[in-house]
Every structure is written in C-alpha cells, then in structure tokens.
Amino acid sequence: MKHVFYKGEDQSRPTLLLLHGTGGNEHDLVGLGKEIDGAANILSVRGNISENGMPRFFKRLAEGVFDMEDLMFRTEELKNFVDEAAENYEFDRNNVVAIGYSNGANIAANLLFEYKNVLKGAILHHPMVPRRGVELPTLTGAPVFIGAGKNDQMCPAAESEELRDLLQNAGAEVELYWHSYGHQLTQDEVQAAKAWYQNNF
Image (cartoon, rainbow, N blue to C red; front, side):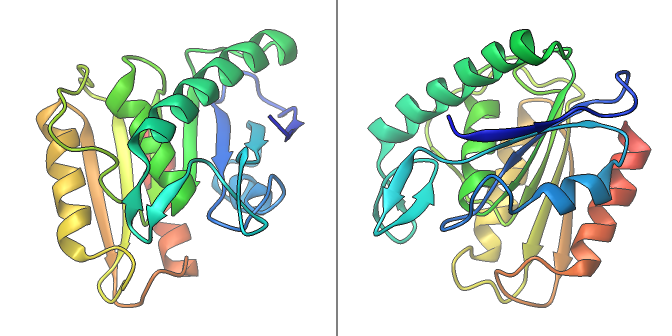
C-alpha cells in the first residue's frame, strides 16, 4: 500500500496509523497526526481503491452503502500491511493507534470489529457503523474517540450513537464528541481529540 512513515523521537509512544477520507492521500493527515502527538511514529496510508480518481479504502455501492465483501477484503489487507510495516520499520505492533477521517475512520472501525488487539485505541472522525449483526471481539478497556457533527448530512447522529453503543458493549471506553457543524473536521474537534489522546496515552 502506498504510504509514508516518519520515525518519531520517542519509541515508547504509540505509532499513529493515519487513514484519510475519500479523495485524500497518504499526506493529508500527517499534520493532524503531528498535532495529536509530535513525538510518535507516523504511518500514513493511501487507500487502494479509486472511485472516479479519488482514493478510498474500500468500495461502496452508493453514498453510505458499503460493498461488504470489499470492506472485509480491504480490512484484512490493511491489517496485513500494518503487520508488515511493524517489521520493516521496527515499531511495536501492539502499540498502534489509528486516526481516521470519514472513509478512513470507517475502515479503522472495521479493524476493531474484526480483530482482537489489532489497535491499542482509535480516533474516529465522522465514522459510520461499518457492519451490523456481527459479534465484535472483546475490546476491554480499548480507548476510542468518536468525533461527530450534529449537522453531518453524510453521517447522521444516530449512526455515531449506534457505533458508540456497539463498541461500548464490546468493552471499549468510548468518548463521543459533538460539534454543531457538518462532516468537516473542525479545529475544536482536533483539540478535543488531542486532549483525549493525552489523557489515554
């Protein structure tokens, strides 16, 4: 997978796995990652799917309608990539925190839905519920931050609340942060995520 890796100053910090939104690339969230934790390793990945020339992490059938088969395949592909990157770049595979926005947050959420201990925690900016009717692995104590907009047309409030409930029921410690805007990532949301991250890591 196309990616960039920046070695952090402090190898005891988590490695930040950055996952962009639709139409983004591996450079988009590097500034965000450095804002959250300036001393951490950064592994920022570009999605392998192209939708009308826009990179994504998995296919969709329509807006808000995921191609489930592709979602499963791409989630496994991403997990395997992170496993290999940990060996290549010599970071602690058990100390990875995902930061995803929109489409990137959806695949990060599905990593949590699919694999036990795949992430130490996650910051999910404007995610949806990736899959329904599945049993989640035990996520006891895993810290998850969900950023949501009260006027987000792409991601209704009920979606954010349902994702929180599913993760909490699996044992995760979830903080759901609301702002009154839409799907965009606001500075207030970034600062709330940073404060949450500093409390948890």
